[in-house]
Length: 308
Image 1 (cartoon, helix red, strand yellow):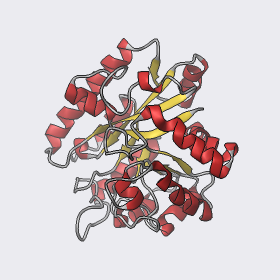
Image 2: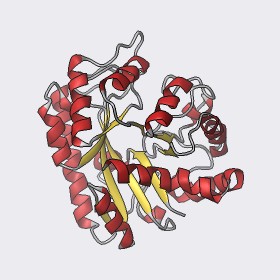
Image 3: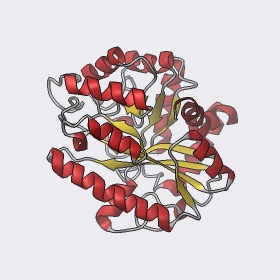
Image 4: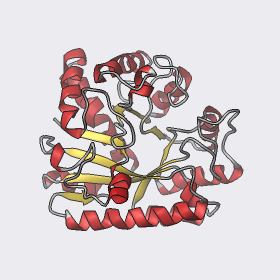
C-alpha cells in the first residue's frame, strides 16, 4: 500500500512536546508507518489564531528550525522534498518523503515578501486561514465572514506565480469564491469533506467541489469525526458516504487523503498512521483497487507532477 497524506499537524505537536518524528507518542510517527511502501507526508506548521502576527512569524521559524533538525537527524529514512523530481528520487531510494506546509497565514503579517521567504525555505502549500481572521482573509468559523482582503489577493497571486499551492481548507466560503476569481490555476483543500453529507462550516459545498473537478485540483478527506458525522466519535467507515458523494460529482481524479493526524481526535478505529491500511482495505472493497490507489496516492502524486 502507498499513502500520500496532504495534512497532519505532527511537526508542530512534536516541537511543542519536544518529541521526535521517528518515534513519539503522537498519532503519527515514522516508526508507526513502517508497513507503508511509498509514503509522502505533508507536515503543516500550524498558526494559532491567538498569536499576534509577529509571534506567529517567530513560532514558524522555531518550528521550521526543529523540522530541519529532524530531517537532518533522520536523513537515512526521510527526505524533505521541494519539487516532484526530488519526490521521485526519494521514493526510488525507498525513503519517506516530507513536504512542508503552513496552516494559517498569520505568520505573513502584512509582509508580501514573506511568501517568497517561505517558498525559499521549502514551503510548498499554505492554508490561507485557520478558523479566524488574518491579514489575508476570514476563516470559516467567523460569523458574517468576509472574503480575501486586497492584501490576500496579492498573496494568492504571488503563491500561484511561485508554484506554492493555495489551500482553501478553513477558508470562509466568500473567500473561496474570491480565490476562484483571483487565480486561474488549480488549488487544493488539504483536509475537508462534503457539506452535503455533514453540514459543518469546515466542509465543502457541491458548488465548491465542482470547481476542484473543473480545475483538476485536490481535496483531501479529513478523518476528524466532527467533519464526518458532526459528532466527536464514530468509525472511519463513515467517511465512505463523503467519497461516494464526491464521486457522484465527478471527483474520481480529485479525491485524496488529508488525515489531520495530531490536529484532531480520530475515529475509534483509527488510532493513527498505523491504521491507514484498514481504511485502504475498506476503499478496495467498496471501489476496487484502482480507485483505492488513486485516492490513497496516485491523484495527489499526479497533481504534484503537474504543479511542483
